Length: 405
Image (cartoon, rainbow, N blue to C red; front, side, top):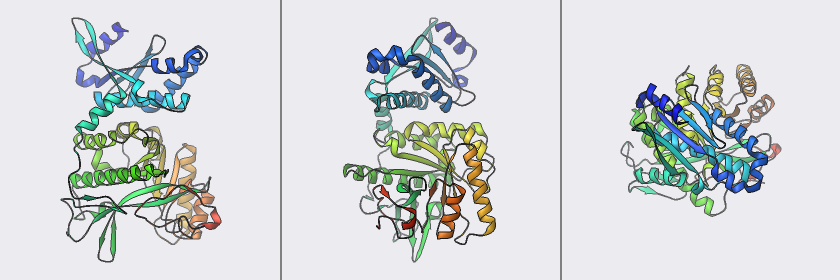
């Protein structure tokens, strides 16, 4: 292995090489005990499959010995690469053992060569997460945690107006339950509600304002979830991340730093929803963005249009689902056709689907018939200041609001 690493280090500059990491399956081997020999080949196959899901086409990996993988990341820095590798082993532990022990997971970085000897630096996943936590800028005063989370941010327009984090339930059509909540920023201006980036101080927001908004939503939603988790509430949470917030490394790092502080026990309940992506985004570029978020949640989905032809790019880049919004409350024949095409195209690519803007029974019937997985809108349930517990919601009870029997 040393010869192969020397060759990689010699042929590529540190910048070009990105990052070289090593992950071992020692922790699994110890926990599986006598079962290791019987399941070793299956564990290695599963590990290779997880690596294949995470790595970009420019990244490579190879196996060394019985239970070690060497991964060469073409672009990611050491911290992002380490966290991704740690997440892979964490996923393996959870899949094979039912739970993960981050204190036993170790990732080794190849930091260079000294006197023709490959230099290594090892750290546990707990240490990596602690380092991210220490580097994060703590939110300042001006926050209030309560029925809705509100902030006084520098980009807010009128001091009499507040930005809140609101939540809308999405209905799982197959299981007929409400367990996914979509987080979004809202600002009230008189009788008008401004949503998402529309809540910013001007129509054309600069990227730093969009980043601030995303960080506000993440902080508020996670803090709310932590409070509810202590009260035994369990639900899935979808957090918006705008393209402007992660398109530049310096801004993306702030998102990743905050995501890295999410407690490990909450990550299986989090989905990151990429919004406002440019049409025709290259697969490699999108994969880079998705890989940056993947270690900190259950999945990454992409918000798009019903008529989008970029679904194959989203699937190839590693997205697990796509979300779209109906163009209006009235279901036209054109919208019904677009909805059916959107659902069938996503199904062929094994992408989950979510449709917002379901405000009538006709829209719900069309979305359900098309095979959409998750539905959200006034007909499913209103925006709320606090997410609700997972509840069973038969189809015939839709339209009565969440939690109404």
